[in-house]
Image (cartoon, rainbow, N blue to C red; front, side, top):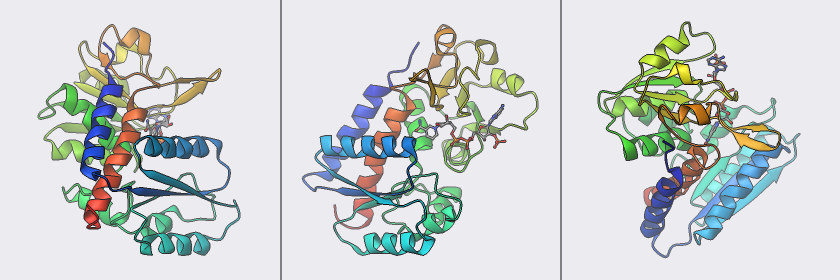
Length: 273
Ligand code: NAP
């Protein structure tokens, strides 16, 4: 029972393309340093945009760049009418304050949904531009189930995945529980859940005996083993017991589609569409 995430991603991109009409929307990605994974992610986003007839551009800064230089550059992008979306690849070097960088991006161009203004809206129950990975999880779940009243166990408490996902689930009348490395009796809680979302970054973390029969498992984890991408769940065994998203071709592909969706939303907020 493997969930077909590629078709969900395809539908999201198709809708985004239709909403963008003939406007060539443009996303600008800012990257500091040489993190290899960030580079791969940035390039793949640009490739997806190009395939959709949109524009993606990567701006790279040296590892030692000053925080103010990056902020001034983001300010320039904020001012440009031909720039519809801005995002920064993480991680940033330690001398750069990620919150300051997130705050520098105009809330109207914040396609990652991580500016405190957009994040604050989410906390208040209003989803304007929201983080893409948790929204991808919501898209997948809404495609296969009714969320109202469901118990959802989330293993991740980060501002990028677990926290915003819990808020989005509350907005849809589900009952989330957030877990982390200090949680006691984690398996007991996952076994009681209708839906388990795992984003730990440890291959094989979620095992067959940790979920109930016919549960839904959303595997957000991305790990590389012997050059191959794997998630956090024991996919083969769990697929006999639950509905589960694959890795690769799962949450990651829907997340990229959600980025395009946010680019279109941002353009609407700016009055471009
Ligand atoms: P992270 O910052 O390292 O967070 C991992 C989370 O897992 C933390 O909340 C941590 O708890 C928790 N955790 C770690 N070990 C645990 C344990 N033994 N028991 C219970 N909880 C445990 O990682 P992240 O950036 O959120 O990413 C998590 C995974 O998702 C990675 O594999 C990443 O590549 C993937 N990811 C995928 C996408 C996508 O679009 N598909 C997007 C983002 C991330 P503490 O808070 O207590 O440390």
